[in-house]
Amino acid sequence: MSTQANAKFLTGNLFRHVSVMSLTASVGLMAVFLVDFVDMIFISMLGKSELAAAVGYAGAILFFTSSFGIGMAIAAGALVARALGAGRFEQGRERATHALIFGVVFGILFSGLVWLNLGALVSLLGATGETAALAVWYLQIIVPSLPFLLVGMMGGAILRAHGDARRAMMATIYGGGVNAVLDPILIFGLDLELTGAALASVAARLVIAATSLLPILKHHGGFSRPNPAGMALDLRPILAIAVPAILTQLATPVGQAYVTRAMAEYGEAAVAGLAIVARMTPVAFGVIFALSGAVGPIIGQNYGAHDTARVRETYRAALVFVAIVVLAMSGALFVLREPIAALFSATGITRELVFLFCGPLALVFFFNGVIFVGNAGFNNLGKPFYSTWINWGRHTLGTIPLVIAFSAWLGAPGVLIGQAVGGVIFGVFSMILAARVMRGIGPSDEAAPGFPQARLFQMFYHRR
Image 1 (tube, rainbow, N blue to C red):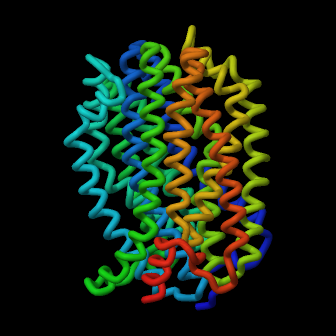
Image 2 (tube, rainbow, N blue to C red; image 1 turned 90 degrees about the horizontal axis):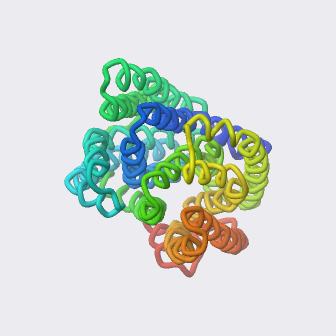
Image 3 (tube, rainbow, N blue to C red; image 1 turned 90 degrees about the vertical axis):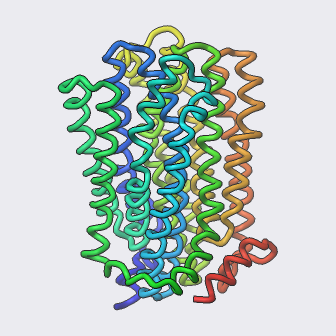
């Protein structure tokens, strides 16, 4: 089997690769996010503000649990892409197998830990009374399905590492379709309300897991037979990327949790507005959310093949792509801000927050895209802790003091504005750091010198 058959990103137009990978990945992502968006519409139609607020609180915790899966998926995708770029196809199969096994085991342990502490986590977000009880109930149904979501995420990452963005996309579309069909049946038809929305989400996760694994088995050589010695050897490079990647991903829900708690000070109407914005963001900018996972395999394959010029060009092409998407979507949101607010029957502060997002804050999302692209580069160039530092800085120093300052000045809108300003600051910092990393990589580097964790990764990686 030729290298080119498995490593399709080593040749061809890089902007086209970035565009195709991002757009196909985003279609699948948006299918899932769109269902969450529809969930919120259905819940809003029930006319109970405490249900919408409960979904907002639960969403912050589900973001937290999903971040664990994203971190494991980043590790699986990076290692498989590097192996394919270097022509080590059997090693790619082995690492895909072992990463999935470790992912399921860690996912079970993590979901169990979260499930046992749901009450405390919801309270930390500022939820009280009936709203807190509804959020906990909703989460008690969904959280145990985390291992299946994790399998789906990792399966999609492995497919994208092979350049098979279409099948990775279809897995999430199938899941989103199941969710969309079951939502009205369970929420309204069977009158299950919040419980129905939770059960539909669980069913979608099961479908995504199954439909992401089947193409790997059928079209990409399947999986190897696991063996204890190989698993022990692969655990080290998996953790070398997964641990900082998980820490990186966990920063976002921590920052969002603080934003949710800050918004809770302004009442349930403000939290409902935040929940609508939180659902709109991935629908509007799904292409940008998908960019990190889409660019990673392109960088990984070319880095594995030691083509550093194409690594640098991939980064530049991705930034151009981010700018085009953000400009186009920001214009669309501004034009449609009135119908969007009407769709949710948003009034008062809820409407004000929706309008704020559909105005200047949408343009600022460019800097979040810069961070996503930078993180993809760091994770695939042996610098995963750089992503950790950027994300934690953005969601602590770039969130808490700015949210406090702007909310004291502007009230509830200041919460969103302070969060956005932090994104600008750390987006610029990410761009500067990425430029430094891109200049530092050499034709034979697995990880640039001078960084202990990267050297540790290099040592473990080459042991294979």
